[in-house]
Length: 165
Image 1 (cartoon, rainbow, N blue to C red):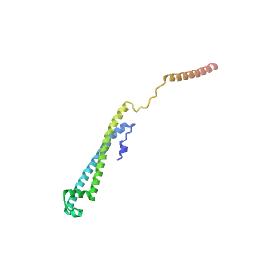
Image 2: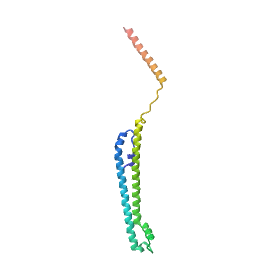
Image 3: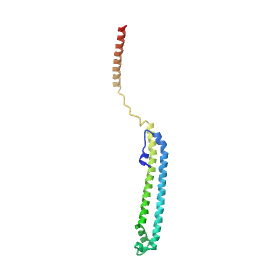
Image 4: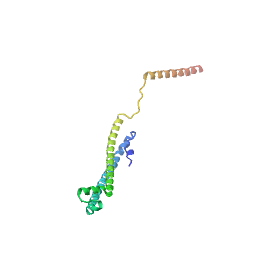
């Protein structure tokens, strides 16, 4: 998925952008759902790792340098194991990916709003090229000069035609 490319809007092809919007929104919504599922799965793996480590620590506290087995001591020992740290990092990574995927879904919802507003602006001819205001006095003067030049040319041609007769 290329989020940066997909989020862009081509204001010259609003019809095509509108046609693609639902598919893009669905694509990123499905990705977000998959990322939430990954978070749930890694959370489950984290809980399983915690339970396994809890049993392991309670069965052999000397292996974890625990002189006395208390709930607080066991919980602290669990947090320091490499197994727990690894699974917890996977959980944090999955949570980050899910948050970013959800942010993408929100961005595509904002893209929809942007498309709606761009269509409104297009309907108001916001994207039309600039219109240069006409300077009527200058335009009249130019036309007068052109008319005089054309008249001289016509007079010159008609004068030659009369002489040739």
